[in-house]
View 1 (cartoon, rainbow, N blue to C red):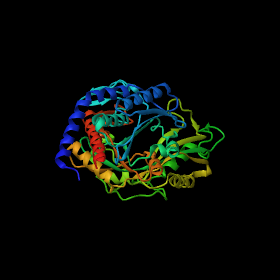
View 2 (view 1 turned 60 degrees about the vertical axis):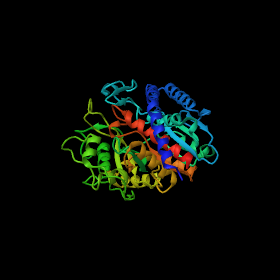
View 3 (view 1 turned 90 degrees about the vertical axis):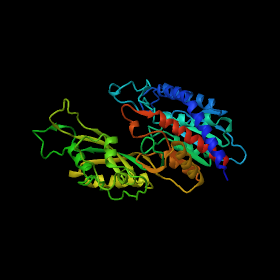
View 4 (view 1 turned 135 degrees about the vertical axis):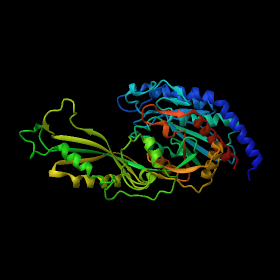
Length: 454
């Protein structure tokens, strides 16, 4: 049994240690953010190598004696480091990623995306939250513990998470021996609200489908042929519109729903976080949290069609759309893709030539919340934030979680991080709240300490 007075004294010591480390950790984060480590096709690969080398250096500084870059199929190198557990203590695998989303229109940023800048307690820059903050959470916790860290530590930081098409899942499957652990901590999510300690207990799965329509040998004059000539773009629009009912709920037969039991998401907060314009309604029915975390959603994320500027007065012969489908946790991506494909083919008008191809997929996740590591994480997080912990779903997908579960089936998995709604991950002016980051570093230090002393 843990001695409560000594545990409280240890927590106070760690809180002081983390506070003293924050100036250095901020410098580390700024250094990471300044590297444009984008793994998408068409971007230079040099920054990815530079970021991997930088991460390896940070892991070496916090006492991991075996730090190296690992070859991952079709991906930049992963950074790996480890040190053994003291007798009787468990081993913990810590995960984050060093690649980032492209910045988009850099002129829309208040400050340059790869020139980190603090404003009102938040550090701005691409990757400041997603997920270079996760790297700093891990290194900060290990630095705070120093030689007092009893648990075995393995750290895996990959470089193609945002692309979602690299080989990290195959790597995890092939190197399960390297990644064996009792607990896996992923610092790649965040909190329900700034200052509200949150454990993510579910992730939606996902699949992407490329829909291609052909109806004519080539474009034809809309005056001479418009009417009977089948318009490929109009056919595609009709097919895409059939995916939802009048209320905006997904109407594809075969896509599953789950009951949601986590914290609610109030409509006013959602409208603010999502930037919904005044007077514009929301799509779908049921609670916001149900729609986001336990039900499927379908979004058209790309469309190949003639642009408005310079458009010819012609009937369109070919059109394509890229459709992103988010899945209720537990549904297999291939099963969902097949259901959407059936629906689209059935909805195709005028017997237009239609192909629907799955281009990517990832499984969702439902956490087991009755284990000792999960309980220790909840206590550590609540203690670090000085508030009650909430359990929350996450609408996004992290397919690697399912890969970890297959490779290390006995491990407990903890998902947390320093992202919050104002972080605007993937968007313009991404940022991390530095006080939130400090609390997350402390939470992880407390967790590792608790696991080592259990």
